[in-house]
Length: 89
Image (cartoon, helix red, strand yellow):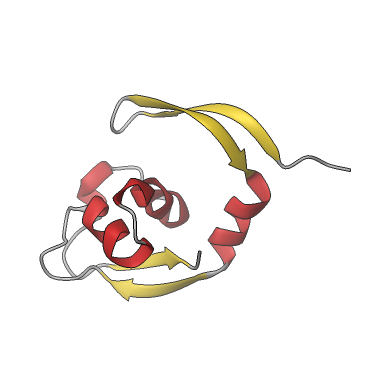
């Protein structure tokens, strides 16, 4: 039986921070396929934490929005009115 959860140390160069923990690789791929598209709401531009809180219920899940949108430029990617993918949790 293949194991899909491995302990990783993930480094995010945007915020220069490491995160240690378990990542379910299968679930991460599911998030990339199971999402809906919306526009970045007014007042939440350049604030992935507010977007994560609004749509996912937890500001700490902002990294997931970065991940499924393939964002690599930090908050610069969260421009006003831009379409973004929100994962279905």
